[in-house]
Image 1 (cartoon, rainbow, N blue to C red):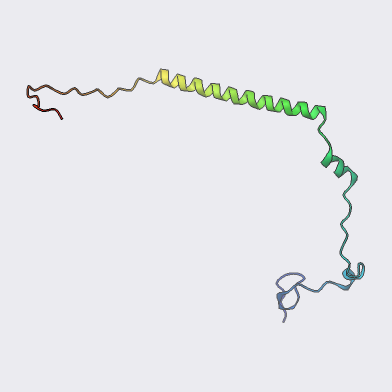
Image 2 (image 1 turned 30 degrees about the vertical axis):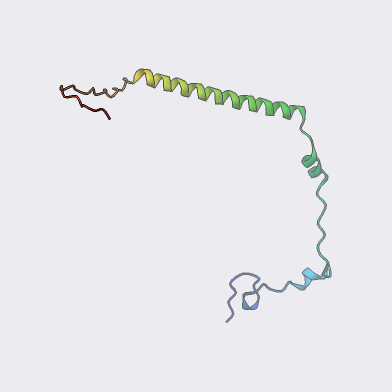
Length: 107
């Protein structure tokens, strides 16, 4: 009994030989690449219209406005947090007690 693991697999797991009808049409010559449709070259090589340029400028302006607005909101939130939160206790500077015994030689 012969079990094929993949459709179209030939003996020993290798690819199946192409059907005779597939090779009869081109007689071993490579397939020529079809030419791209004319609209594809127009789209690929076309310059942007005035409307597209205006839309891009509007989009960039809106992005900058949003960025500036977010920065301002964050600054205000930081300031609000600073004003609302109690001031942190600064560590007290410990002064040396003078017990009357001073060193004779300072190093």
